[in-house]
Length: 46
Picture 1 (cartoon, rainbow, N blue to C red):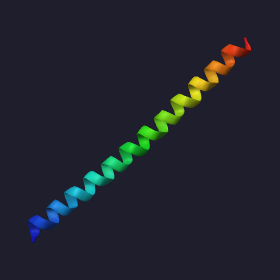
Picture 2 (cartoon, rainbow, N blue to C red):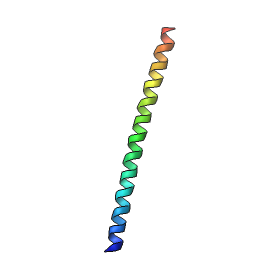
Picture 3 (cartoon, helix red, strand yellow):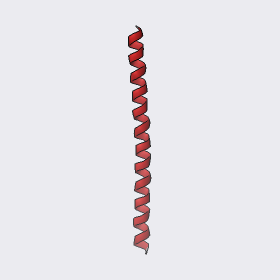
Picture 4 (cartoon, rainbow, N blue to C red):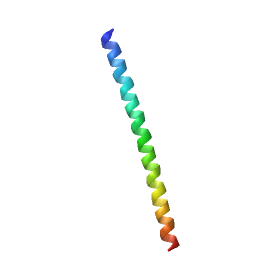
């Protein structure tokens, strides 16, 4: 029983890490898109 709960905890931890990583990746991706679009629009205005 102890081993089973250990594996469950490990899986839950892994899922949390993956979720956090995906959230971080998405925010970075959006930030890059916003920065590049902002940079492009500034270039066009010059």
